[in-house]
Length: 154
Image (cartoon, rainbow, N blue to C red; front, side, top):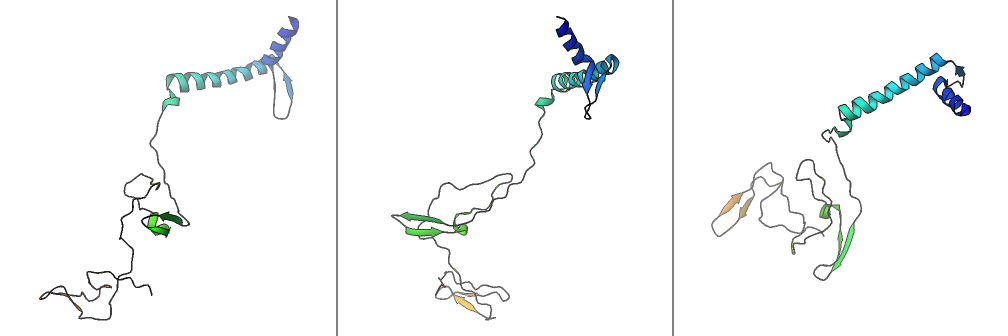
């Protein structure tokens, strides 16, 4: 019993500093434990119980940037063997505060990404759109209205 009281007294009245100096003083040891107890009581009593600090919420402020690299390869009965690059399967953001990750793809058959011809040298170019209708090309524009898109890959 005496050893238990001595151990309890040593716990309450003695403490170590970072320099590992043992101070044997009831007054200083009791003050050290009282300060520790006050800090613990403040955290538990005021922050957790009274103010419910563990339940506070805040709005999310974040930014997500994804970069897609590489290609995808498909081999279907309708399309056959096809290689998809980033322009084929990256969809730009359509909503604020959202992240889109493509996991499935819906194909629109006979739709292609081709190059359309440009005509910047002809200032007075006209396009015949019918038997009696002509549309004037707009000077300064980097395009000429042809109503068709031609594959210019040679």
